[in-house]
Image (cartoon, rainbow, N blue to C red; front, side, top):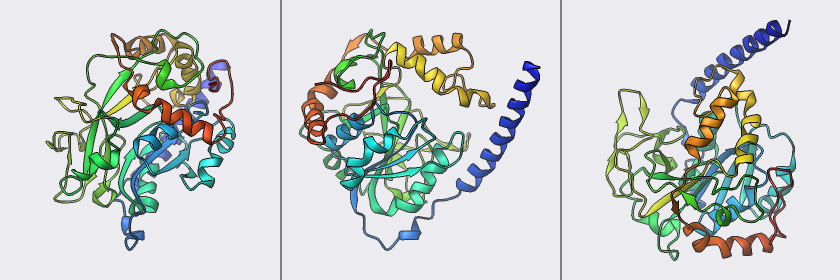
Length: 339
């Protein structure tokens, strides 16, 4: 009987996945940013993100990117288990720094949500980065540079700039430590990861993807060295990995694991997605054994790198205190910050 119920559940989820795929096809058409074409950009640098149950990290992530030069955030909640994020984000919404909306689709909603973001808000931004809450984007050095200063040199030459991951691990934290993430997690891989995320000019995007995009005729993305990143005609998708990674000007710290307890909590959080037929154990491991292998693979170390904390730690703390302290909610794996 238990097997029969599970099979019925998987069948229902498979149908949901088919419906999701159909909706993604309809949302995957070229972005019609002309809906607000007459509007002059309001923000030079903005960020868009889809999130789910990231209460403990939302404020630090926002304050960090404000310090780096981001002016506005378009945030899309994807079925968080509580409404705590609304209280956490309220000061930022009231200050005009955050636009909070609901994500599209029930499963794997990033691409259609990004497409809707481009359609509804793309014309408001000169540059828009589509990243996750565990990704911290900033100019590599020196700390006196802001994102807008760096991006000015690319504005007339590229539709987007591909920025490589630098993978951070658990830094030997079994349980989640108190304090800033950028202070506590300083152990990373010595190598630059080939995978990129892209900060792009919405008016030059034809179709949004998760890591890179398709661009209108005559435009392409570049890496930080101004080398063109061609569209991969073989796969029919924009390139998401580049052969010669570098992060001397722009970088994304990717805190994928955080503490070991958080990584294991993440397995429970993502259980919904494992039940549909999404065949990618690197994103949604199917079993606890696969998940432990996932943790080992992404628990990067071998090099101490405190650049994020050195460049922005004081600024982040000042921002949190100015807005009344961190308002995340304590759990055994996601404590709020204490100073």
